[in-house]
Image (cartoon, rainbow, N blue to C red; front, side, top):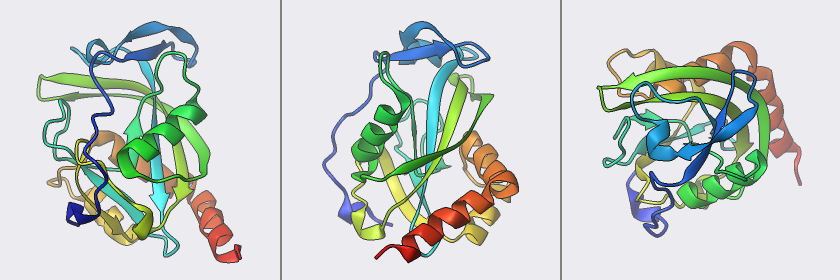
Length: 200
């Protein structure tokens, strides 16, 4: 979808911001700049991914901006980022969905996992990632062009096809998280969607 409904192109992240380093048990053990966290094979830090659905059950996906250091112009889930040093996860997820998408949504924590993925010798993600789901509407979305090149809503079956297409430019965490949502947590998504239809 064209960014004709875009919000202002505000710069909302930088390589100098301090992220939270964690151990394998997700205990905070220090801080380090975002740039340094993604150098080499990556240094384990706390992160989050948000999956936003509309009332039809379609998932909002985004194409990452072309000037991103890692996986530029790859398709990813609705929103993904990091809590900053001193920031609680519930604060970070609310902040970032507003900064990237212009969306204010109630988010529900689903699970967390650790992964590592390298991108073309440029750097890597090494994250302990918290995964959330939430609801939005298409007319609420105002993407920030400094973060997002394109966006669209896809029904689950089309997301499945995208994820399973080995030639599609899809961010690795999106593949992992979507497969796990479908495998083990799809009932939670179903309950979330039912809550929207029951709301007055």
